[in-house]
Length: 416
Image (cartoon, rainbow, N blue to C red; front, side):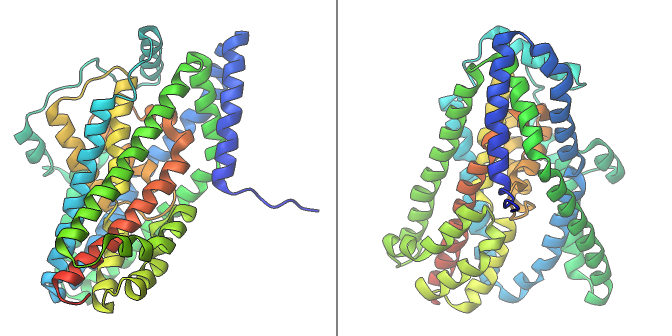
């Protein structure tokens, strides 16, 4: 009798636990060098595969998503209100994440010797690390978003410039006649589908990558890193809870006449689906049904705000990226200037817009944010073991944010 194949998150969890046990044994029995030389390269290959798809995924998905927003011109005020709500709540979410990470410092606490080993390990793999990152001027951050050489932006992997190019291209595609823009859109839709398929293939080897990365970390640093990992997860989840209970509840109370309890009861089925599937896109039909039937939002508002939200509204993902970036810099013993934290806000905001509403997409966009401030991508390996449960939690936040926007916009338009 053929046994059923375990779900991906179960296999990743098994890989995590096996890697922890194997790494602890290696640390205690003295064969850490074997783990570092023969097992860690598997994890490094996994990180390289993730890095490989960042640029094409961001450019293709964001260009196609932006090009499809030509309905905003028809919907007028509804479109402006929807976009404004999504952008404002995303910025607040990132700010909450940065505040909690800087205040609670989940990545602090590693012994100095362990931190130096971690930095040295990354440096040996060709990652340039500085004890204190450079301090760019704020005006330079905004000017550097505009590329002088688009090809150079792609070659160097300058994420802010690539996102800017994608946004400009998508907007212009929406302004030219459809018979000319559609072939271009179809091409990049095909590119996007190919890259997403590559991501799916990469995630099939995620359990082995997690095993290799976590076993190497625990073999080098013992159990200390695991306690910090639990602290990091707690900070992310606390931030997500605060965002839902404070930001969304306040928006509904201030801008609509709907009771907060009614809202959360009405959206509960969509939240459960989002938690189990870790996908806001897969939850979209349920979200629309709950929003229209349980919350009384008109079909006109729901059919615009919710699909758009599933594409560009990723508050949970943005908060996660803020916490994760600061956490990884703390683990590596690096420091972020205020200008670099502003860079995180801008990059996480733009990257969350281009995030696919599918499981594990947050890992890809986290790589974008890390690259924007020069943080080693190898740091992703430290947090990948708890990625699935955090992905499930932030998907709930993303779906809740979509529904709250529909309620607020419908109320202000008299269509609730």
